[in-house]
Image 1: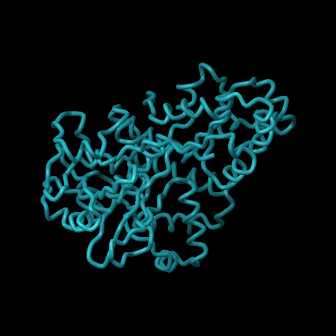
Image 2: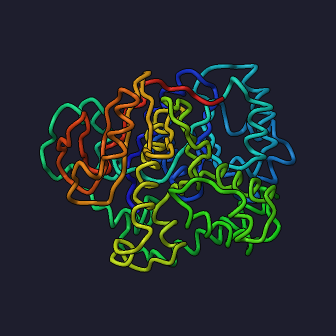
Image 3: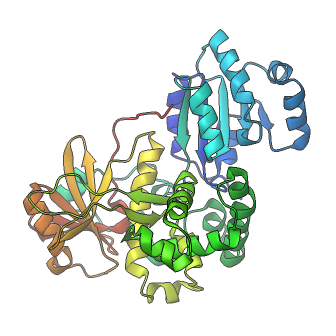
Length: 411
């Protein structure tokens, strides 16, 4: 499979100028190993800790292992040898030269607990999500919100990207880059690997079949406000179990909870977060869609499109090491899918799967913009930006991503 350059590589290099250790974490099969080897193996020798023989050496004598590896290295799958974190701390305290160690690891509670206890202030933690649309288009960046709001964009190939194909196959590198990959077989294998390896390692889930049913229901709830009672009732588990299992999905970066915006603008607002499954391909497969056509004609189209846009926003923030500043807003009379805060400026984003946007599609967005004194975007299936009046523009669905100008590394 060819390597598609990842936007996160630039942020990793920036972090290497400050931190002795950089950890890339995220779901399985997002390309963490590929990124590190393609971008940094020339300067950092590669070592896989997934190999039992290597883990045996670490267990027997971790200090000698690090001495043998050398002063700079890529340590892949660090979750298999978390005891190394203590010895890395000792090494770093003796030599704080930046850019020494590049680590990768699937997100889990034990790993992040070890990081926070041993390498706080010494390590930058950067998430790698599935591919973003901008990475697939190889643009690396997207226009700023101000550019989208104030200027028409030409209709050219760079702006055309099929929503249906994105929702059907998603952004995981293998099914996205290689059209010969059987989407159904890949998704089933991915889920089984996640259930059998990651969840058992977290020791948070006992009944994997019930958890799978729970995840299916979460996928069916994507784009909706979180309802703990309904989730628990429909799956047959307690409210504390719902919270614990949902935390597992969030920690695994398979699900993002979009919080409500805290400013009510004089209205009574809902205070529950919205659930968004991060990869629409995985969500669509869990919902049983076997073809692009059935998905595009199905009742989940609007929710999947909304979650796809939210996922692009979260990825854009992660690519720069920033904390996402995105919310949703809902009152008794209106709702806005996404509220973005960028440098103190509010933007409203509404998502519709339509190909023919009209002011009617932006009615709720217009109400919110009037209350907030903000501008808005209607993300939909068009290939050219167009005005809808009242400071609102319709834009191609994948170009509603604001810039994230300030990097705040999580350490």
